Amino acid sequence: MHRDRRRDEHRGHLTPQRSEIEPRELAPQASDAEITAAAGSVSRFGLTLFSDWMSQAENAQSNFVFSPLSLYAALLMAQVGAENETLSQMSSVLQLTVPRQQANVGFNALDLALQGR
Image 1 (cartoon, rainbow, N blue to C red):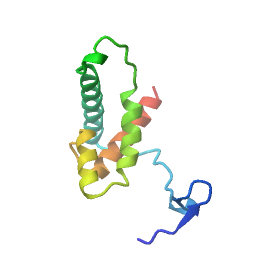
Image 2 (cartoon, rainbow, N blue to C red):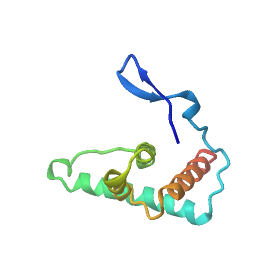
Image 3 (cartoon, one colour):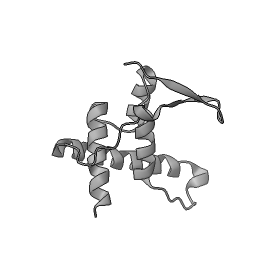
Image 4 (tube, rainbow, N blue to C red):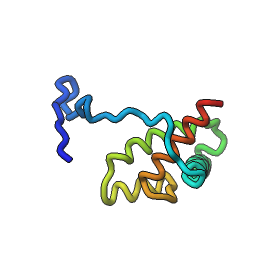
């Protein structure tokens, strides 16, 4: 698929044309398994991040507040553009147990369900 890109004159890097950006699916056809996998990945990611942070002696007595869901969402979006070794590494960090497409569909459904609460 050929992607037409233009140079962003203010930042000096390539940006996608407006026609390349797909709108968010507001009624994703996600299975219960995909949503459960997404929820499990977010939970494992958050617990691993917190555990790694607290295992460092200088952080053991500090306060640490973060949103695993927000961090996960940002990294999952970045992972969409990853390939090869980077894709493998990001999938590992994100604790993905399903292929990328299923992870994205499952997370989208999970995020929409949480927004509706």
